[in-house]
Image (cartoon, rainbow over all chains, first blue to last red; front, side, top):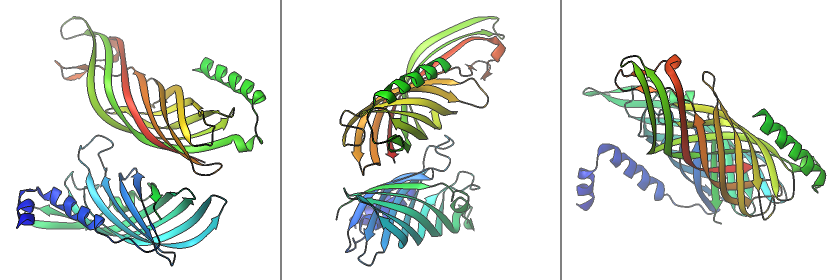
Length: 187
Length: 203
């Protein structure tokens, strides 16, 4: 009853943000250690959590504010995206104080965002992700990841009484924007 | 700008001859930096001829504001001494609403604990912001931060600085609701003071 009261009083976009946040923070940590850090990109800014399994798989969960048309001052409010990536290690080498790995990942993205041709209106996007990155893990517990990802999917937005579905263009057109994740590894 | 560059190069040559190091290439570094800036103060002095009223208008004021902008840059530099690093920086920066420039600056970094050790850092840079259409923006920055040494040649810096920019912006006429023609502007100086915060990865 309490949660239904809270939900009634929240605005629609805040409900989505709350749901995504609950999903993000309730994820279990994997057995091989985990790291927490920040996500930095021209696409947006946010937080990330990475869970490494003992078989070498790295699962990455990112929640970030989508700053499309915000950084250029057109709008004041960003969108929000949650991204899951399942990284597989392709190659790597170790140095005295660091390990450098090349990773490739499929994944998924959901978000409440604007698009290139949405006229400033928000819509819900649902995409399949493909990401590649170079991960540097340092002995002192800091991990730096530099990579690119492309999102292929759809954006659904309300149009009158119905819903308009279209290709989520920003997922492809902004795929060349790199991201940098800086995390601290806990164990 | 040219005079400043010549003085800096001369100082660099003197430092290089006095500095100790393992070799030239081990002292060369490059990096990426990005962050945000809060523009908090604007001082402007406009003097222009207003065709509509027929006389000159002189405006000078200081106003507080809160404008969030961003920047990112790449740099290349050299450790000129055990605790000093000199870098050339080029990037993309927004100094105010609708005013984006490509800053080209020379930065001096001082690391009291050593160029590749954990510890506090202090920096100062000066240069110009290049724009395609208008005159260049002059900018300068001082600040401090903390360096986390990741390996022998890579590090992560957290930086906080105060940036000052001088610009000659277009002057808005609130009565006519249009920009004053450039030929009527006798003076249009504006200074923007901002707090910068950012991350730097050096390798």
